[in-house]
Amino acid sequence: MALDELAATIEGIKKHINEFRDSIAANETRTRQVLIDPLLSALGWDVTNPSLVELEYDVRGKRADYALKVDGKPVAVIEAKRLGRQLIDDDTMQVMNYANTEGIDYMVVTNGDQWNMFSVFERGTIEQRVIMELSISGSASHVNALKSLSMWRANLDLDAEPVNANTPVLEGNAMQGWRQSEPPKPPVLQQKSYPNSSTAAIGQSGRGKSIGRRTLDSTKSLSLSGSGWYDLANRAFVPTGKRATAVRIRGEVVETRNFAQAAAEIASWLGTEGFLTREKCPIKSRPTGATYLIAFEPIHEDGRAFRSPKVLPNGMVMEVAASSSDLLMFVRNLVDLCHATSEEIRINWVERS
Image (cartoon, rainbow, N blue to C red; front, top):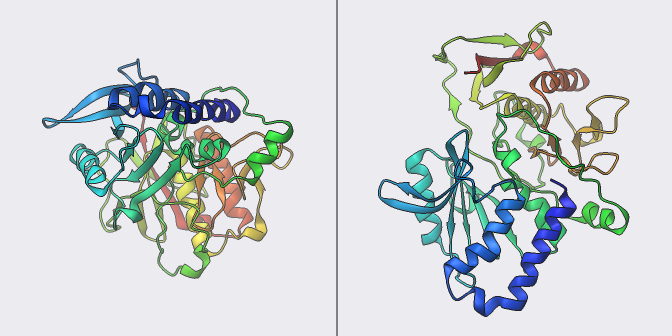
């Protein structure tokens, strides 16, 4: 997916809203066909493929308009309203309850113009659970393209190895627009304090909302068949064929789905502890390459956009689109660069089924 192509799709949707508002607003079906389906498709969710998108998803007798699926399991549900219909808290709570009932992490409410995405299991008020808000008619298309990456299939399917995509290189005047735009607010790490941490180190950027991370009782072991803990300092560990299920840092255990989330959790801790400061950034994945691991905005040195950006508590953006082996190498180097103690960090793994 090229970001400029995504922006072009959003620009086309904006044009339809401006030119055919009354016709589209007549009912929900038109809104879905003309406004919602094209954006989902551009984000990798083929609405004609039931293995990816299940329409009218049944939740104990209730219906969610869309369920976005990975490996046959829903990762997000969407409640659609007709264009012009104001999105109210009752709508949000309706789909929130759908997702909560099924154990689905993310939910979206949209009228085709306004899109609101929430983390279902984040603690706090509805406002505190917001991951992404965008208005297609109210903001520049390149800004909305970056924000909409929260719903990008590759961003919600972090268990999969990165796939080849069109190189999202922006040229000419378009590049300037991207660099001036607000970075995306994808599902990101919980902004929490670790033992002995300095909360002042988190920063005041407010650029990213957090998703609910399940923090486990550090006195209890994970009962996972074929699993094991390994020290981050153990460079002999090979993650091929394995999945990271949790990270333990200074005794606190946080559950993860994969090595991408484990790496981002470790980077989050480095920022929270004050090891990873803005003065150290941007940081490249490899010294001689043009790819950033952590940067001020989700754009690499050569103009490519981050494929799977994660906003850290200190306001920096981390690229987690890499193989498990590379991610482990990158995060080990990052810990060394920040002069932190890798022996304090352990990752739990399980064989992929």
